[in-house]
Image 1 (tube, one colour):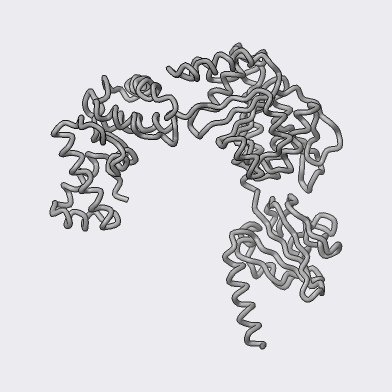
Image 2 (cartoon, helix red, strand yellow; image 1 turned 90 degrees about the vertical axis):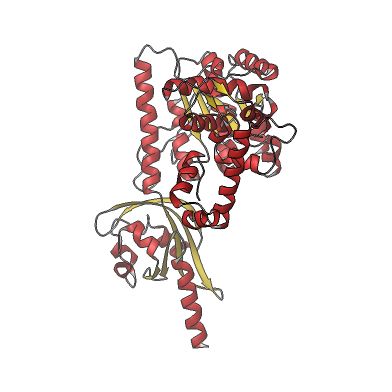
Length: 467
């Protein structure tokens, strides 16, 4: 049995040492009995500096009232997602988000375990983000620039009648102060559309602030949106949030379905009565902010999968717009391609005059899962490597070449010239050889019976990726 216990302890230590979060365990006296390498990196210490020593001796800036581990030792109750700022024995300031749990073995309380995420860098970046937003707003307010956004609805280019009509409706409804919900696949132009609404609104000269709700952890997102009150947690200072900075303007919350459910409830309150509290604050703050939310999933799916609160959805669902995918407005594919060619001719100092018929067919046949963004990046790639006055098949990016290779295009009619057919056949042979040799160019060259330099030249010529 003792040998089995020893093996179990070693296995447990091996598992804990590979967890990418700080693990700190203390006994009932507050003495550290386990401390992993990640926690040591967070704290700027060595494991030997902490193991076997009283917690408050190693972290003198903490006390019985501020240490989450000591609190759990006293209460024997878990604490979830609590911010903690402290200074280690070397004077380094540390900021973590802690979940601290009591440990029971056979109903006997034996200590507490803390799982800590280092938010020092993330919190610093988020605060810099808010400060930068504040500085930019100050500059814009002091200038004579008539708008705080870069795009208007006219910048959302389309030949699709339905999409054009939706733009007109959005401009008309922009004068309302009601919240707006915009949804559509990634790359359909949601932020551009939202900026167009702000520009056409009566708030056009007021702040426009955008925040992606999926980019920042829950606790930091709450403080970014609502600000922090001094003393709300150790080291906290008075800091305004984005709602205060966006007062009288528009706050754009992208990927709203990624916002934690508890935080969605707090957002709902702001939408209902226009008031909120800073994190840790006891005073209500009013803000005249129009909220525009966006999602890259359908609201029905977000509701079914419990990603979005139904009451928040119904509050946002006053003015709703669904942006069409590029494959639903095929008339825009070649139109936008011409626009992008003109743009990249200027920025890349090129003189490309058009697209070959075979490339047009590929562009029209492809489903464009990345929508307009993917089309623009594809054209940028082709414009970079094109040496002539027309975009040909050999200039297509790898995804579109794979699309052709899989037989998903050019199947109904043959429009390829003899030269293009040879080029496509050659590319397929190279891709197959690279696949069989797992990207090893020397082995692929041997397989194809080509000199290595010749194969490298052809890989560069066709814009292939050896990997």
